[in-house]
Length: 116
Image 1 (cartoon, rainbow, N blue to C red):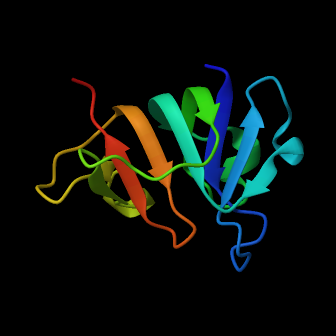
Image 2: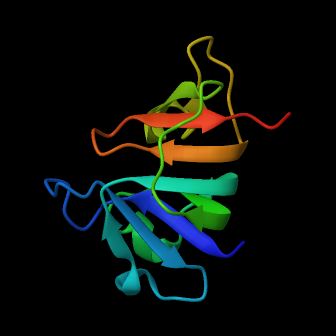
């Protein structure tokens, strides 16, 4: 995977809620972003570095796109947190380990387009 995407663990009060870096870069080199649109996404445990800041799961993506709104078939997701399995789940409770697309909003909302 080419990119690593996480919540902004460096500054949880920042208007830029997300961090994006190339997978070959050190986590210190991640760039803050207000929104993220990624394709070919899987969720995995964080690196030891990121875990040290309380970030337990990151998204790995094949492609990070220019910002754009989520399509109509995108579903709302929520992160269950480390005490409830570290999963991204939809309204029905279904766990999503991979997505065709991930859309992270400036308001902190998470939307995904499931694999077909």
